[in-house]
Image (cartoon, rainbow, N blue to C red):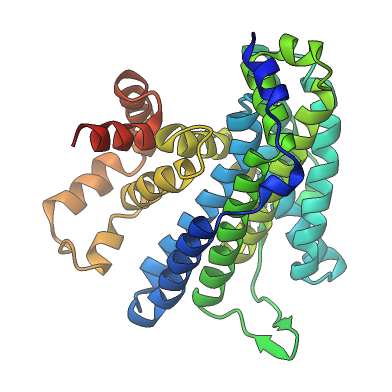
Length: 356
């Protein structure tokens, strides 16, 4: 009996999606600790890295829904990231729409576009689908570069000031990095809980059946196109949210920054390094890749943290020789993971724990 048939026979009802108490308690404790962290951590660089870390977790969990659960390994998620970023910024700059409204309009636009993109690209399988996803992101990047009157082309958008965020009776000034830190933390927690719910729901079991054997899943009545498109819509929506949020956080975007292939690669690597199709994988991958990437791009962060001195030989080595080496390091990590731990860091930790 195929794995798809076994999955169909053992599908739980939607009531089984309830998050277990131990998982909820663990997540809440972790969120409380992270929420209190800015009380003791005053260095802006650490808060900046914390925001990027939470965004990487959100992106990893979002990609996991389509790539980990459904088995459709997209390398075009930069398209949705960029759509979210450009929709948020362009509506604010050109139509004076609040960026806090624009970010959700970006989510809506990316979700709608992903359904159309999926309807076309999901006719392909395996490496052909991967190439198609890359092509879609590249086409959108080239369009953003070409239509300068709309997107400003390679010049991009620079935000000088953000309006006050109104949360009920509270008015939150988006000054410094703390408001972004807390917002990204909350959404990272919610995305992780949603990912767990999808994994355990009937939809999740259908997606895993599709991943294991598409033909067998189709033969027992699973609508391949509908469920793959649904997974892509959810994934694209959260990815677009991170794009809009990132644009507001760094206050600058251009086509190469938000639509570049390296954006898609980093999202994919976060899951591969941590463990594809697992709940904790994106968090583990982000914990390794985000600090590593930031230290390679800006070794002065190690100086700000007091780990190294400004005249350290390591700082000079990174600045002079390794400032653009993060792509090489990503490739090296990928080779090591594939050779020694195909299940990612989570699989490695399980094996080590099993031996002890």
